[in-house]
Image 1 (tube, one colour):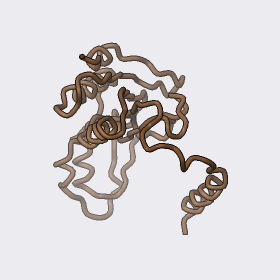
Image 2: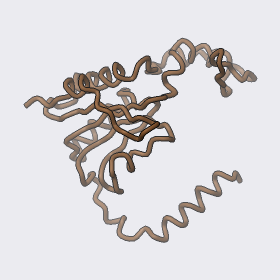
Image 3: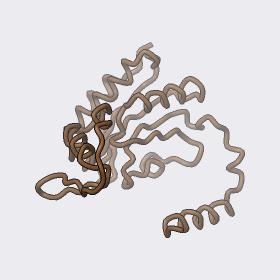
Image 4: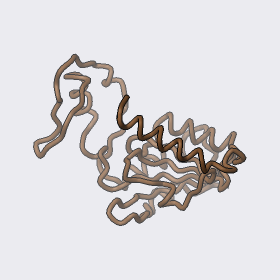
Length: 194
């Protein structure tokens, strides 16, 4: 058994002791909004957005990008579970800014094992065969934060399954201060149209 597994199961055991009335929370989010954000462990959407369990949907992936799967989740959140407002929140110092699609594909072609980064760039740990399957994935890496937030808000706004009357807000979370910084161009692009 792994130490991490033991810690997770122990934490879950403690959590269930104070679970209380949480089983009565309704499936739709109480505050009727969703957040699309990065999976970075430094981000705690519940804290930076003032959420309690049952308040909002939080959709996370590498970079907080508007991938097909993220948009699928947002559409379900709206259509079936009643969210009426969405936030796209990227963050400073994002790991998705440290590589390109080409770098990722080259690393995967070399090996499926982990990689590391230093001052000279990314290096494959080696060992084991690689794969060209990574060539068929859009990695949605990030050059600069503001344009990527705008791009994601526009991608969501222009998706044929997204209604025009839902507001989509674009922000960047500052990992050094905890502050949400508005991206005005993204908020303008995501403005609801009646």
